[in-house]
Length: 444
Image (tube, rainbow, N blue to C red; front, top):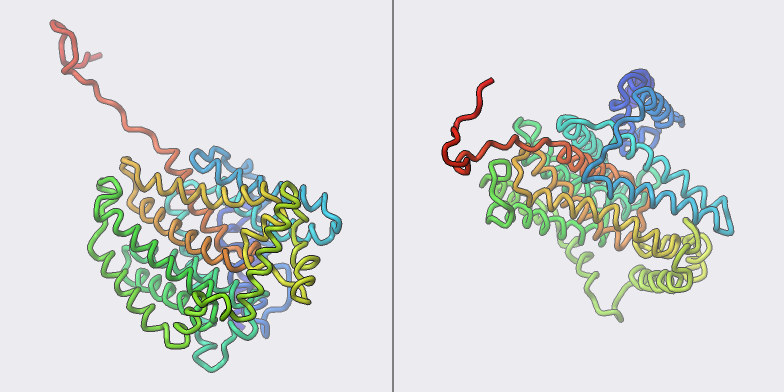
């Protein structure tokens, strides 16, 4: 009953509010994209167009506000790379032999790209970025709580049935992204209870790839930990330029050590055995690992044969994979499958989307500007989350998993706000005034 009330209140109340303040519609849309009320509470919430209702109201409110502001500044490359990737997908879908298959991809990605564009055009403050980050952390944290609760009660729902159409690998990638986000949100959070709530969410998210037995997710967690430590050390040891807004406290190391200890405690013997199978000799690989190598090879063959337009979005699992595995399946690599389905241009645009936001946030981290401390820390959290995602996505095809896009949206928002900062007014250097001329400024 609580789930039904929550869903109806946010859907219809949120739709009304979104007509006047589309930003709140964006927050609700992101929450529904993660929580998926019909899957979270199937016994109480009937099938309905909840996200669509909120999205329509959000778009009407967005239009009423002049479609936001399109001066993206340093985020321009990131935003237009995503729009370009979607546009190229439309082109390849049109050119494909089965338009129905291609347009399924177009419809699914359009539901992600459009809210992303709405977000980067209407977000205008650090407080709004904080709220977006917390909506993602809280939504993924609640989902992780339910998945952990099911596991503790004896049913591994992640491994057995997944959630909302996502299997164990897809869920694990979403949780890796969320874990990196939640950890850095907690580091910078001033409120004690919110800080530990963020850390608790991060711990629950990190546990999902472990009991979900996702090797790609486990590897991504290891990479996430290493990148997080690097980003903390970068500020502390002077690799990042010294400034008041960029000084890290010793408590950051304490939090990292606690997170590392918690991760090692949660990883039991079965997790280490499963993780160890990543590095076995080719002759000892299991059927799943062998099939991945075969599918990647097939993707590369298609990329060399169809380098410009590929074979069309969504074509690989339906028309190519069954030739090798007997049933429809993804290529188990976002990057390889994107190249096969959309050619090298599509792959380049997608890599540019994620790579540009990571690179430019790193440059922001290195900058000598005096920025809001949260902007510095948020740069770290987006970098860590997206690097973890990039690693995990090398082993799973996750075109429609939404948290990475919205985390990248936070990064684009950070770059946009940093671009809008006005430079400090210059003071006159009176030491260079010509002899005989007064050094004092003229008084009107």
